[in-house]
Amino acid sequence: MSLVELIAQADERGLAASGLACLDRCVPLLGGDDETLRPLWGNLADASDAADWGQLLEQTRGKLDSSKGEGEGDEAVLLVHRMLAAAPADRCAAEVRTWADACSVASLQIHRLLDPAADAGPVDSGREGRTAGMSPLVAAELRRQVIVLEVLAGHGAGGLRRALEVSTEGRRVLRAVVSRRARGRS
Image (cartoon, rainbow, N blue to C red; front, side, top):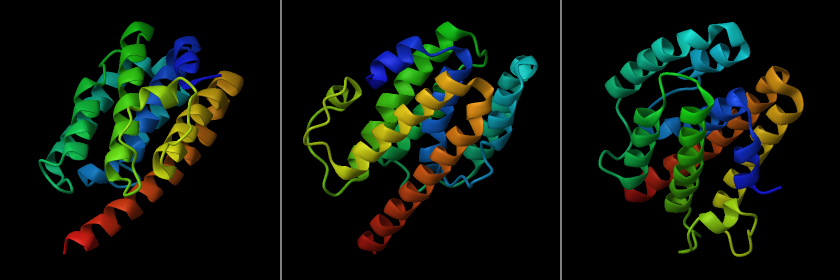
């Protein structure tokens, strides 16, 4: 099943986790650490805490706005800021679906921008299942997005731990790419 189809079929929790996972993997560009989005992940684990999502989101925005991002003005950093700014304060399915879809595209675009072997093609074809010619970093991000949605569709709240593990792995990969990129600029 393509990423576009998985997003279309995901429930509210799956959509929120999908958008959050994309943001989580890109948070190193904003200077965030491994714990920055942890309260939001915890909120997804308990359906009764949905009302607290907006408050936790504002706290997270405050932390990331006050932290120093890598390469201010860089297109990739701007895309991460947009993902964070667009996160809905309410986890209702309609708002979260739009955000999760936008985060998916933005995250793939960020990985494309940071991949030295990047192709010049749009990321939409990969989201629809056509991955031929896709650069390694972008292909890996696409796989992570698919895994997160599949795990949550199959296991509900029980899949959050695996979704977080996949996101953590992707965050470490992106952190290494950003580090290499910074050393190359020096």
